[in-house]
Image (cartoon, rainbow, N blue to C red; front, side):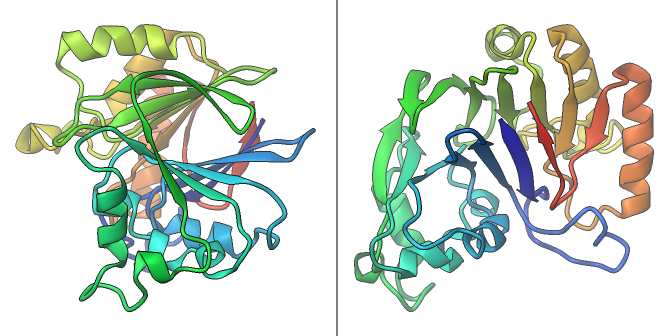
Length: 267
């Protein structure tokens, strides 16, 4: 599988000259099975806007797997070019968190957006997804509950060379969720994991539903994954700060990288 980051920030796409190196768009990850060209997209933050501009018209199915409904994971949907082109095959896999189609339609509704959902040339089909196992566009997908206000889910996508685990917006500390999550991520080929806070910042943000980089590195070591990518960087965190976070995290788990918009890797 080929994986590419289109958005790596949390909360808002806040661009500053000091933070542009790692990118400033919110959550979106593209996963492609290169032999077949099959695709899945993880989350629809502002990063999905750039992804949409690269997709050929009607060339393939585009399933979008949402982790949850907070703004930074859906705010790119109204600006995703394929929804305005007839003949696209788009599916939104919406976690069963009390949202679903109604939440998606609300993103496009007045007074927040000028084009209503039902007026789109290719409105995405909305399908509910729950913890468990499902096959999506030929990908073997496992779904796991996370610890986040309002709920969130993580995904494990099976691949020939190893599995990809995507866990964003998760707060460690609840053993009833953390222990199953270890089994869920165990021995993955690559782990993309929330590291929104630093250890110094986290005590003031308990209950916000996020982890710090040291927790992420420790979790990767515990799960014996091959590679760790820190993501959901706090808005405005500078390139220099992320360089230092990456270096410090490598002291705990050497195969760590801070996720960078536009960069990719193969699992």
